[in-house]
Image 1: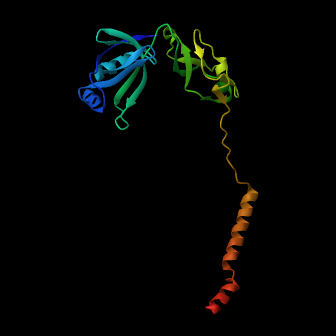
Image 2: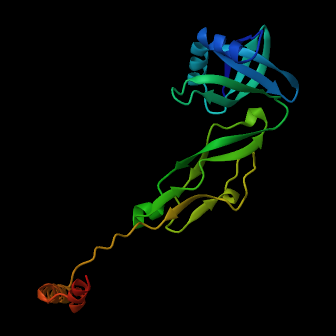
Image 3: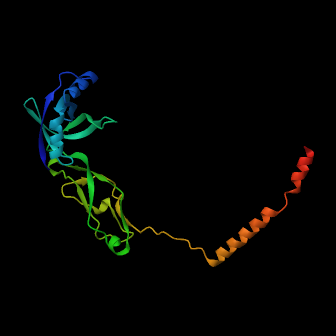
Length: 224
């Protein structure tokens, strides 16, 4: 797993006002927490953070340097402005390199299914990520699932996936991906009999249009 160095500064004050001032200065307010440390507020340059994320992979471990001290952290949550989508706050989780951690890893489908090539099937993904537990050194960027042997009707479940030094936390029976039958579009063709019936219906409708008005209508007029 790739590790990326990230420099940050302690925030002397907390609260909405402090966070607002931090953002106005071009920084992103954040908090660092973990099972073995007391949480503390920090701020990181927006420009520096953007470059660090660009260099990092999914679930990357950051060497967070704050006032001469280094903590190995993961980004646990990213808060964004609902309109501009600009990052407004970050949550960093301090980790121990000797204790397992839980995280979700994205799934990547590889290969072309037999059912797609031969029978025109469709590969449908049922999960986008899988929750795992492992030591930080064993964190993987992506879980590759090979679908090349799938025929139409076949599927891959959690129980079919095995990753070295990683414990998969999702239920074994859950479906990860399936090769479904192709969609069939049935075009209805009008038979000659249907056309003839249609002509008859049309003729009857025309005769009905020339029929005299219901006698009840005249009776109602007389009542008025």
